[in-house]
Image 1 (cartoon, rainbow, N blue to C red):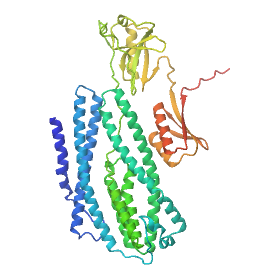
Image 2: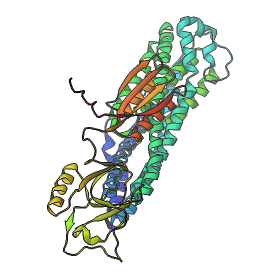
Image 3: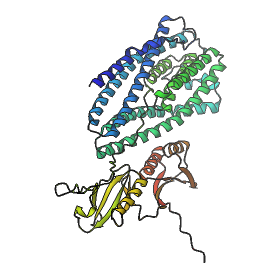
Image 4: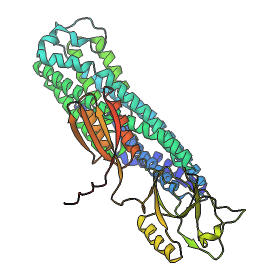
Length: 518
């Protein structure tokens, strides 16, 4: 509790103290507002809140790191530490939420001052007005349509239809992020492998969903942003509004600077691009709507800009390291076996994740008296599918340790000790298996071509795995060491493009036996 007290005090110091560094110089985002005292004070306060937010995000990241370290210790105090860390995390996240509410009020006021300043200094082109029914009604304005190249106008309408799709991507991503954050915290405090693996299955699926959403967003928003900024800049240039082009260029520079300065504080570059660039596009549209005398469009676009700025892309990246519950135990010998009627040989534990080596001492039709195992421990017994009882000793971390243990056991009088490996729950008797033989997996994709989004997702999830083209509509990805990883990639591919189908194929990587020369 004392430790938590000091950690909480540290959070309060972030809230109350670190902001003093924000007496830093700030610049007006729009030329001409430097003399507006209210505006400049709001900009300074915004910088203070941003510094505090970044510091709190660093605290949250550190707490999650401490939770991950604590999860690996699994000692008697681990649960107590987990509870304290969770309370600390809750305090920090509550502080971030409160801070962001204050920040939103500032941002709304800053935007209102900027927008009023710009619009009050704009004229209109005259003769371009027509009644409008929403934020994008100006796209149908005859004057605007005539001012744009027909092919560019066609592309503009195409990307406009994609806007709702990108909004949905961002909304779903943020909801998924909250789910991932909650699942991660549960995963880090799970006490048993069964509980942890159940959460991990759900957690990894949510993370895979966000990988797909992020790639879709990056592709769609990239097209929208490039096309809209090009067309609107072209229109403003034709109207000789270099002043508005300068304002927008300044916004682009500022947004890039903000993105670079916050690079370690956001989880998704695609979401950050959307949140920083969408207001630029909306400002372009407000300027165009003003020049076309589209009053209702300006109000609608202003509301849209406010909604986008309420999305906080400064969310800490969550790195999930797969937890291993494997309990490694060295082989020991004693004059008297620790096992008896009241302490029988335990069943062999099979871990769902991780690698462990045990030494097989023998298999028998019936359970054996422990005296035949010469005081070796720890012992484990497994009833095989054939009904026989398999006895193992030890729980070793590496193949080298297992090989050394075999030599020791032989010296102790065991006739045929064999190395058995469990890797992610899959058992292999290495002493019986050809050492060069190994099972691997590939993903076969059928039903069409692989677009950039699908390829990007595969490259992200399966780094180092090649994509091979089998035919015009069939591709192969691999190889993978585990079926589970192959299945995750296959599921992500289908989420990217529902027209595609996938299947997992097994391959044996043992080299073919050479045919003897006649």
